[in-house]
Length: 381
Ligand SMILES: Cc1cc2nc3c(=O)[nH]c(=O)nc-3n(C[C@H](O)[C@H](O)[C@H](O)COP(=O)(O)OP(=O)(O)OC[C@H]3O[C@@H](n4cnc5c(N)ncnc54)[C@H](O)[C@@H]3O)c2cc1C
Image (cartoon, rainbow, N blue to C red; front, side, top):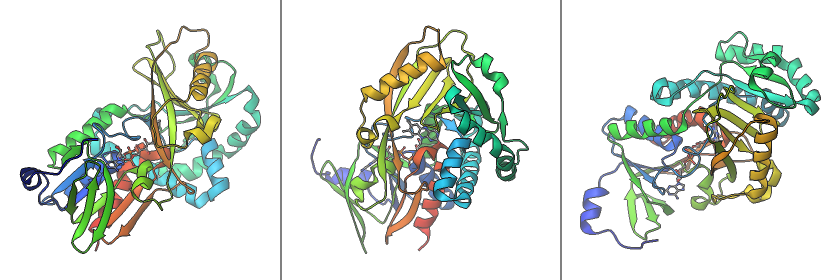
């Protein structure tokens, strides 16, 4: 890392007079900065981002605009209770509407193609459990989404998709998908058009809050002092704030080359959500499998895991696209922020610092709301 001091010119021209700095330019950081400007248009807001682009989860996810597949919700109810799960579903639903209003469906390339959960031949028991819960979930989640029939068994669609060894499908009708790259490019564009100054290539190493504001030390060695700070670094929270309940979780993702006559459309969850895939640009994007090697994937470092990658290729070739010539075009990884509770942390860390982190696998849905909450908390004395 290049180490140097700021010159007088740099300090007085580029970093002077900011009222607030947001650390991290993912969905949460951008949404927070935009909300600060909408509440106080004259506020000088900077975003400090360590990557050339946002470098965590927001430009590296699957783009599912989803609020809950049935096995995920049943699992979560068993762990956290129904009230908490329904309140997260409500937040995910509201967050998606807010994202769509903020960015616009065209900019998001939002597609209402539904979300599916698929059940293989040996998952009959768990499928029956889900099926029994459909009426109850439709009543409770229908009240949130205002849809009559949110969940629906649609086994008749299986021949169209052409999976192998899959016996049942449950459709979540109001779910959709976005183009993650377009979404983030649009959010960055909107932020810049609102006068928010985004600095890339600045990693904050240390923060110290005092009555004179917050001193930030960058990894280049120079420091900045800014009155108020919103920390939106999600999975990387512990490097700045070691006592935060956030654990990084790496996810492996592949994209295929275009597949001729691809008939798979929508977002799909499989094996209690451990695997997920969707169509995009005539290709399949497939990710997950973290449970196969949890210990190695509990890391904030990008990088390959060959065990998981070969399981994903196997799933692609034998279950999702059996008997078709399908080749992997590229791989990448993204880092989720998880915790002991499946709920974001939005809280005041010290007098002038608020944190908005731990978005789990739900940040496309709830990121804008979490950013908004963080911004409001920062402005409340
Ligand atoms: C593979 C994958 C698939 C996913 N699929 C979906 C999905 O389909 N639907 C869904 O709703 N959610 C999904 N998610 C989750 C979603 O992407 C995240 O919850 C969301 O992007 C989190 O946004 P964020 O702004 O909190 O964090 P991030 O996007 O991770 O942003 C944090 C930013 O902080 C920066 N940063 C970190 N430390 C520092 C520092 N010290 N100084 C300066 N900058 C720093 C990072 O570079 C990063 O840009 C997925 C996640 C992954 C990894």
